[in-house]
Image (tube, rainbow, N blue to C red; front, top):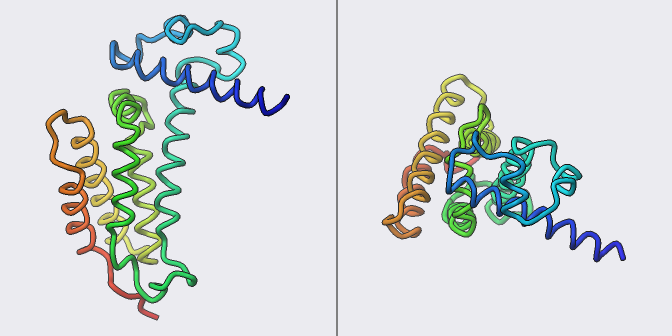
Length: 194
């Protein structure tokens, strides 16, 4: 019985998220109401409040779920002692970039909707923090210069990926991956200095 209930809960939340994404395509996020979302999702208003306080809470939870998936892609690509490249720092960024760009492409409608919303701690900022944390954990350097360079690179990478995902006539994802790989690889040391 609980498996059925869990499936219903997931389905309901998915319908509410999808309704929000579709509504963001139609109008500004600040003008979207709970009534709009529940009507669009064809779900009872009371059911909405079981899971979310308001549309801002729904948006935040959607952003956080997406960011957690984006973060996991980076964590899975961190060098580790088990990794055959344990003495190298991400010698090939291609696998990471393929997964990250693939994730954005697979969730294009959702990502575009989140990029269109303007909240104080928006989706772009959260993506930048993931990239910053990844780079700083790889280079193990907390000097001010490295921190600023990391912020610059994260802003640039997120800016390029955001522009790419929002464009209708965009270059192939392979072109984007090659460009990001070339730019980012130049900023990572090839080996850990011990």
